Length: 80
Image 1 (cartoon, rainbow, N blue to C red):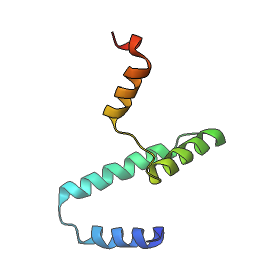
Image 2: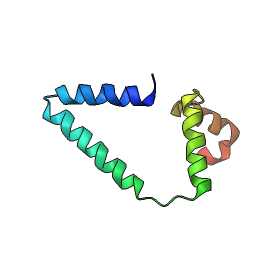
Image 3: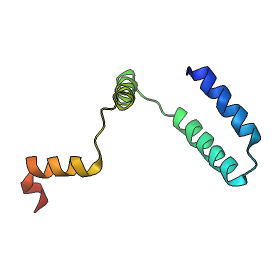
Image 4: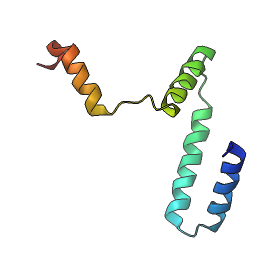
């Protein structure tokens, strides 16, 4: 599904929501997003964020436990 269709689907769903709690969550998300837009990132920082998001979309992720296990194996002297 393309981004425009996804946004339209969300708008249609949100228009039917009667739960005040959900509306408040969306409002908090909106405020958080707008606050994030005021960040002044360099082109390199934006590229790094985009690269990270792409990596996540491609499934290149590791859960916390596996990261901790491999870190402890590689750097056991840091976990005494």
